[in-house]
Length: 265
Image (tube, one colour):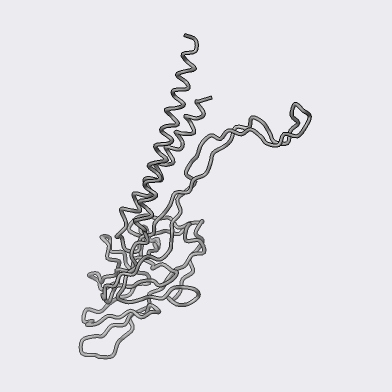
């Protein structure tokens, strides 16, 4: 009956509303350093089986097709796109871009390690390298910059060198390590450009940049957001049109039910 059509169209409106939320979030972060866009994956719901294919029909022959009526759609999940974003040249000594696979490690909440692609680093009041975000997450392993450091340089393999006042020879203060995951799409986003490890992502493989399929670091650059505004705007229009079509399906089902209700008159 038309009631099934209304339920299917309603599930479509609900799923499209989630897709609209995802697209709006992508567009809102078009200028966020190291941001990774996501998409909503859809899947159809269960089917009412009114006739099974292959069963014997009235002519004694096998029915070539069945009769199935679907019950709508739902969002199966959101999937992050970890393609590299555009390059932003800053010429700042503490800005680093990860060229290839890998995540920087920072101190998360409750002692957990969080992972990010944002390489905009600063030095906090204690001299530790931190993310340039409001919480000031400290890079792991911790790297301390002396107060009398005049120049700071980060090499492609993550080693941090400083030139101290009165000493022209660069001194190594530590090395930035990168973490890679067998399934980065399984990471859990928690805001602040951070991700957390999950059972779906698998455990991290940690090591110096440039080794074992890990990307290298490029000093003086940042990785921009990988959001494609044109594609997102097209997706926005498609979502709006699909929403209108599902709304029209609800109106059509409502008119059908109204016609059925008036048959007795």
